[in-house]
Image 1 (cartoon, rainbow, N blue to C red):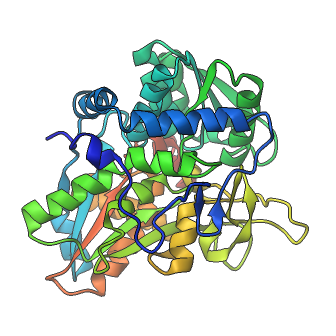
Image 2: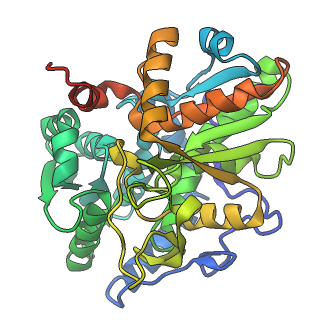
Image 3: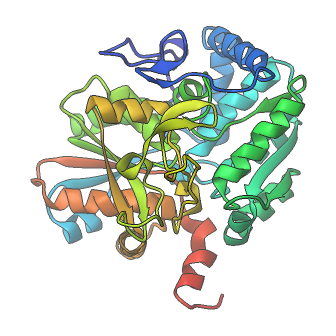
Length: 412
């Protein structure tokens, strides 16, 4: 079943500020804090995005690609063995790991690449941490015959080598970023520098719901197909909405894609799970909403992790895709408004969930996803058997096999 055209791609009606407003703000968060060089490019992008989301032919093509190229809709799966092991509520997975390229990232890159094509841009750039967004960007660029440059921190290149090779197989150039922490933050910095230099012919496929307006809302809108499907599937197959939604949060596109269509449903608890790394008591984590403060990062006002001098801190997580010192501004607004809550899961618990789900369900999850799974399992155990917890299984763990084996002293 294809997503409904046109009307479902547009914003939900505002509810107590389900934004952004006309200036790209979610309450006090968001906006555009960029150089004057990028302002015309962002304005051009916003005009095109709003225009094509009201263009029936564009939406028809997008729906077709999501159905026949990505493989949507993704199913909701009842993890029966995991439910029995955890005790309590029924644990359900939204199976984004079954998408082409193996994660939720492809939903957004298909939308942005089609928008780039409609705007006449023949060169696309992207940043990536875990490599899934880079792979998804390389995939759509190959399909549409576009030049593709992917920026990736050198540390992430080492721990995500299978995805690096996948990008290269599809013709993308992978640029190693050796500055700073050599992870996602620095890759995003380099991608922004590239865009400033090549604004005339280049489209920046940003991989998360962060950055300057209109990216947070645009990325959310393209990935909200996840939540729209999930809402419909829950009502059709279970006769009720889930009691709780759980998703990991790095920059935030995975969680917002699931959360956004449920924001008006006050009975649905929404929990974002950040990477607590080696513990929130120290600095070796990436839990921006749990332990950060408000500032400006990558063109947006949001929560971030910085030191006493106001410099962005190096972050840490076993998962490359959550290793980011900021978060999308809509998440900042959801936290402050109380509509969603955010928790941290450390490396140890994430690894335990990684193995538990692999062994009980025969599904190897991405390390990013394992953070959401760890909390979802704990949450389900506190609930009654007639309740449901829907966890966004945002990606599969093929890419993380080398990382896990190395951490456990296993030679592959």
